[in-house]
Image (cartoon, rainbow, N blue to C red; front, side):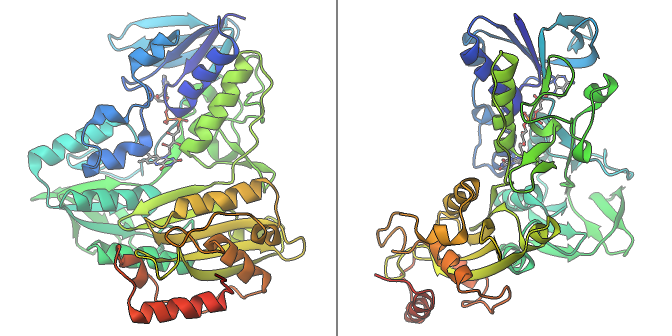
Length: 489
Ligand SMILES: Cc1cc2nc3c(=O)[nH]c(=O)nc-3n(C[C@H](O)[C@H](O)[C@H](O)COP(=O)(O)OP(=O)(O)OC[C@H]3O[C@@H](n4cnc5c(N)ncnc54)[C@H](O)[C@@H]3O)c2cc1C
């Protein structure tokens, strides 16, 4: 075994190369990348557009030189065109249009995903953008600098659409979001969606629900969205945030089996089933720890882990991908929304007997400055009491993402909801409560609460305070809340 060839130089591809280098120091490792941005943070693109990360080159985890210094050969602007399974070679087209053939002993496919392109007219008009690659972000940036757009239409209200609503608002554009389903961020429960919606509106984002786009057309002054409802939807810039699909053309043309939602089929060793060929990241399906089956959650966190497993195994190791829980967090203006594991409906569909409790708890002691409530929904199995999932919405300074990580760790350890209460979590008044909010949620669940209890505080309202001392009314509410949640100390 000498030559490990990796196609794709983003999260999965670079993780695979680095791990293969550690495990097998003398292997010849090559990463071939279609564009010229290896090891770039796709997740950072909204923050480049917003201006929060103004220098695009800082989005690289590692520079090309740093990767090459580790003895990894990097071929930029080399697009793989054909895999010859028999000869164990891959043909590439380089930027000059020349074909180049590279042999491999082990091949890792890390070709990621591409933006879903609705089959409608006008998606290639000037001022209409997708956001997946550095080049997409640079093109949008050039357009903004040249045309100084004042308004933007975002089509889609998933994670990326929401981050971009925040980003473009920060850039001074007035944003309208088209929400075809009428539900903003469908991956969380409706009661939490309402908080997200309120936060968007509070920040001036106009939402248009239940609108069916039929195309995009050039009108005087910029692109306009044609729609079945004949609502006038016009902006100086349009972003199609309509999701992504696994990039598997190369794999399918070579006869590599395809699995869930179009991702390359893999086992937990990240093997495709074809001799010596591994695959990882957004181009593959992923094992779900709770569902015990493959799903397709295209996430950077999963891509890194799968890449590491693929790299280790391609280098002769025996690693296994333990699975995803779909843990994710997103910051939208001043709030953070996070989830892990299964929601009630998903758990029920998977054959569990779920019940869900909801609490609103202060992130730290209400008497300490900057205290802010967060809303937590926790799902467990009624019979086995196994913790199945959690969702949190709170102010972005309330450590929402680390709290969802506590739930993720607990689910990974197959803990029951009751076990959560016994966790020895840290406490100091400016940081948490003697019972952390995650434990307050667990206690509420163990009390057998119903799913749709009225909220203790007004949705959205209290997430908006920033570092202000709590008012008397809020203090009172906090005492009531804490009493109700059996907070001590
Ligand atoms: C705007 C945005 C924000 C996101 N935010 C988050 C977040 O906050 N948290 C999170 O966990 N995830 C986030 N994601 C998802 C995350 O970016 C992806 O899961 C991650 O990038 C997947 O990594 P990957 O290596 O599998 O593939 P990709 O990042 O898609 O990279 C694929 C690589 O393959 C190369 N390639 C493709 N085809 C070929 C070919 N034929 N020949 C040669 N090279 C090829 C590409 O050039 C690229 O280098 C976000 C995604 C987007 C679009």
